[in-house]
Length: 597
Ligand code: XMP
Image (cartoon, rainbow, N blue to C red):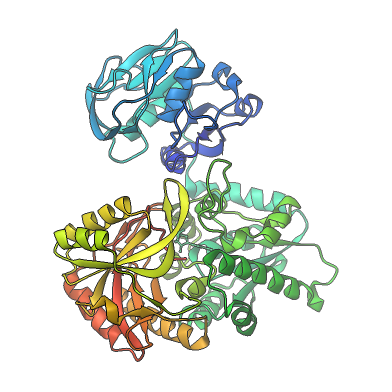
């Protein structure tokens, strides 16, 4: 199969480039910026991604200088474009003004990158520095009012640079430009279709497993189900043993539903390991989300070891199967220049050790969720399984917020001032959640807005303004119930992970899922985590709703569900015994992650 390498300069758009290339029918792999030219010469072409750094910064990500002698087509994007100019003896100038957002580019030389495209096109820029002088052998292919070298190329060597981002939807002909690079410049064949990748995956599974047996951990979610189905089809039911760990943090009735679905599919026996007690006792007093994640990951491995100690497995050579997909790896810091946002349960130390020993099978490790769903369809899995919302391995444990001590809410005049200008009021909660800002992890306070309607036109810009201007907060929610708050009356109370709290969360979560299905919103949203927050007036709890739309979970937008229906749902949730308030999360990803922890 022909492949394109996407070199990662640390930007959040790197994965998007790889994805776009794959959508165009060519397999793309993300590699560290420092990858050797020897390795790169196995690829048909190389794309150097943008990134947050400046070429003038000491310590900014650097490629091997020999990259710019590679006998393969190169496309530098944004920071990659500037690196190309700098290494090939052009000139990059520090920006006086930053250029963010839409710009109109005038094409001065169409072939081959802009072939059959309009001579004026809308593009998306996000840069401070710019190329001031072309490297020898290059010519300007396009310019904008603010940027004299918006596109450049050395047609002989097939090296190209774009100051704008062709991979984002706001660049009108972005896909077409990438298509021209792939097919007119690199001369790739269109031979990547997730549909027919099934056979290639079978080969990889057989090659990885050899004559061993696979112990496959299932969560019931689409990723592990598809990965398991692929493994069973590649090796047969005899050599694959499915294990489902009941951690106690699953959704209401989930264990039973999954058992029934697997019985129905005829994929062999699914062993359910009851581990509720173990999980709960180890997590009871843990507040920190990363610690929770690490403990859960380790417990999964302990359970795996316990399963392997069973008599029937004694003496056989086993390998562990998991449904890890590409975003799970990247957010756990898989790429050299990417930060750890969250340690996914299948990337804890003991698993990394098994990976090094060649004892892990991850058939979907290079795929995105929508590609996984396509594979599920090709395999003939039931719609209901394929379209299940993603559910994280650590389950409701990371949706049940815990705190060490009682604390009063914090009034903050700057936040309240911003909120007042938009017709709301606002305060900060002494409770933190995880976010992703400037490509790094943040763990910051929550802002609560109240006193106004669920009107997204005013709320979404306000939420963005608050998180942009106020570093202390990375997530903004609107109070649906009650509408008006006296902040002084509310406080965050000491809370741990208990059966009672999880049961309440399961009940609320099940009401929300039913609401989404009944109202026809289930397919409209990517996911809707329901979060339990120990915030109250009288010692009860608060429920937060986090509906988002997304294509792959890497970025997400707040889902704008109709206010009338949401108000009805929040009244129903408020009526649950022990629930005192209901919140609606208004933050996109970035700056907030989808899950709160
Ligand atoms: P975040 O919260 O990082 O979530 O924006 C992105 C997507 O990943 C899911 N997620 C996980 N999935 N194990 C999983 O299998 C995990 O530890 C994990 N953490 C987050 C999350 O539900 C969302 O779909």
